[in-house]
Length: 422
Image (cartoon, rainbow, N blue to C red; front, side, top):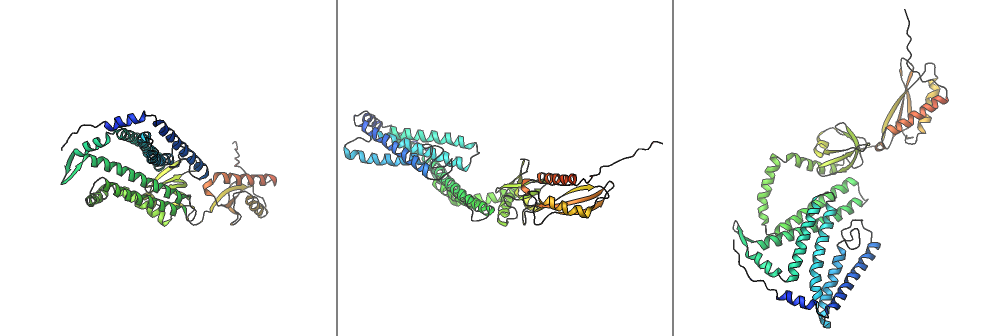
């Protein structure tokens, strides 16, 4: 490791300070305010006219907290910085404003993209603070003119990794480039994923697998670019790939099996988002299929996170795979002596009037048993929306049967016991 120190030159800072207190600086300040106002106006108009999500990366939740406002302000500031000297005016204000706008753009872009890509992650706040400190610190070094000296000092601090000589400046610049590339990759993948999931041209499961594959490919390409920018030899990834293969074979095989099973489920479409399934004595509707696990939401609100490998290797009952229709039944007893042949058509007609009961195939009634206390009738009926539950429609059918029997004065028998005293 080596280090060569050079004195700091503050002449640029003194010149900038003198220019900021000159009379022409007020004109530059007015132009800067005009640039910010014009940027705010353009973003406000686009925000009202362009359809976007509430937490859009470009627009944000408000006018100035998205990435589009600092982009427009920075472009106008750079233009004004080049034009002002032609009118004999000092661009000193813009030498101060441009680094600030660059830092603001970096912070807004990073925070918005990470919030869109990882909305529930607690790392977003940590990354936001880290990027903010780095961005504002870099802008201060830029404005004060200390940045060239700081970079030279970082370049002078070097060390060897094997036969490769790497400086601290290379590591910092490579890390910064890696963050920028990964943020852009996350942004592009989030936009593509949102468009794929909103599209209606194909099945939701196919759109989900297309979104997952697109996201994985973009992140892989972004990671390769980031590693290359950081000065890491990509040929070393061959060794890393071999080590990863050994790790998968020893300890990560279940995790890898879950990821592979997720893609198999989405590709085969044996299970789809919205299907009513029963797995491991848990019944509910599939609300999401991730690459590692499947989320099943029961009708009572409980959710089960089931590893995808279990969905492949175990028995899964799918009520919606080929046909969403489900056959339900209920049992009622009538007293002996009831004209069952006359009652059955009336039961079929009355059950068919229940809103959720299908007309085709229609309900049916069978004399299923000669019970001890009466004649047992089993009523069968079909529904096409099992995701809405079975208890409600069964209750409606039972109420319809009860009203019919009460209207016909048909007795529903109950057990009777006679006690004889010796």
